[in-house]
Amino acid sequence: MTITMNRVQSLEILKSAVTRTGVSELEKTTVDWVSVIETPVETFVRKNELVLTTGVGCANNEQTFYEFVKEIIEAGASGLAIAIGPFVKVIPNSIIELANKHQFILIELDWSIRFSDILEQVLAEIHEQKHLYLEKIENIRKSLLEFILSGKSLNLVADHVAKSIDCGVLIADKRGVIRGKSDPFPDDLSTKWADFLHKQLEEDGIYHSLDQTFEWIEYDGGYALQITIHSSGNIQGYIVVGGFGAEPFSEEEHSEWVMLLEHVTTAVAIHFLHEQAAKEAEWRLRDDFVWELSRDAIPSTELMLSRAKSLNYQINLPYICLVGKPEQLEQSFRSMKHLSITFDHWLHEWIRHMEEEAESIAKSMALKSMVTYQNEELIIFLEVNHHVMEQAKTYINKLQTRFQFLNPSISITWGIAKQYGYSCFGTSYQEAKKALEIGRKRNGRNSISVYADTKVDRVMDNLLKNDELIDIAKSILDSLLRYAEERQIDLLYTFTAYHHNHGNVSQTARELNLHRQSLLYRLRKIESLTNCSLDDPDELFLLDLSIRLWLHGMDMKEAEYRT
Image (cartoon, rainbow, N blue to C red; front, side, top):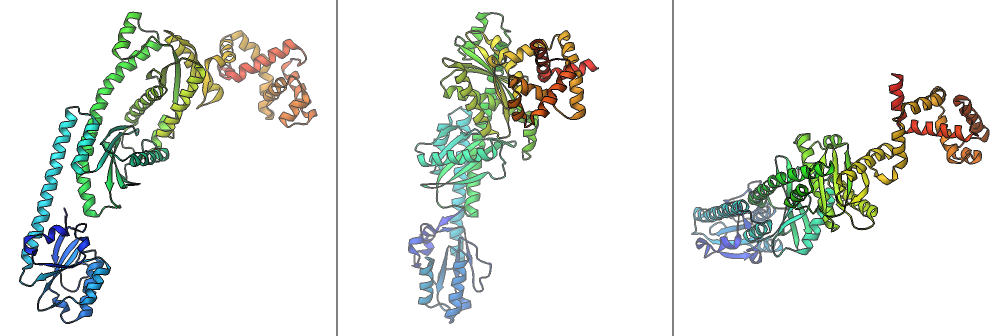
């Protein structure tokens, strides 16, 4: 612990001492220790150390004395107290000028004052400060635990800590949502911290490494510290403490603040863990309810309304279902090698993050929502009131942006129902799920598909169930597929382009980057291999339908057929 040079000078034993230089620095210069040094200095003087000397090694040699004082200044000592007597009768002007130049504190001591008495009193003062500091920390620890266990808000916790340490304090959860803030708290610091965290999450996501627990943030009023709150390798949130001077801390200051803030972060971590435990019970009830809604598994309207009311859901509103499938979750987890938790633990946390964000985004759009995660799918019932599809897509885009922000390696594929309104939860869910499955197959991952746009795909799905139609398609395509495989010429794509261009040979040749004669050769080959004339509308329809079935997934049926 430290005291200031001003406090040292005010000690009873130093009443007769005279400060020759650095008077303006007394209040801001700290003293961590006190020692007695004679020449040579070498490495025996530490930073922030008050040095006592008789000057015995410099007697009658001004240059040696000058070098001695210079080395003490360069070592970062708090000050130099010189006993005026037989060895140093008067401090030379050259040394006074040197001390003034560096705003260094020089003190003249009466020869009769014993160094041992000075050491005793200064060290006693330092130890007293240490005792008071530890007592202060203990009081903060006890009061914070009392606050947390009695369920006080984090605003009150932030205010209490701020008054105890005379600094502005902000508390946020792991997603960056401010949960408590002392009053007053600098607006500029709030903005700068939000920007700082945004950049941190943008670069590393919510699961960034815990290698650096303390982070400096510069703002108009000076410097602030961001301290990461964590337990069992998981980030719980952040505490921001403002009002520091220029960083970085000295080693002594760093250890003092670490000791103090560890108690604060522990108390806030307990608050977050308690909150999490309470939320878990509520989440489980909500999950079960929304999952039953989506399956039409609640036996009566009265029971549905009763359960919805107990969970604070407004069921008598128009809802549409959105279903999202997170992609590559295990790969995302493995990429974060610094995590010390299991995949199951991480997945549980990430599911809760997704559910929280889904509800938060709906709230920001002034919409109600009901959310659950089941069978590797995020199921959301979102209130709608106008321009339904536009509203649903806007919501998904906002949610996607937020997910990418919290975990950049995650992508999600979405399906949107066509059916929306009152009490159509089961139908809406089935449509959104079907849109997701079709969209994922047709457009790949990270796409958004609407059930209303999947008519052709649904027709194809139903046709693929007809074994007779599959046999017909196989008989038409068998030779064509074999030829394409042997010659490495994709005749299916050639036909699709030709049919898409309404039989326009010149336009198709340009699109395929083929010579006109080469395209005509391929078209004749298609006719000969399939026994279908491209000029016969019925045979053209059969060929087109067969190829559509193949491209839609008949290859899987073909594998079964061959088996």
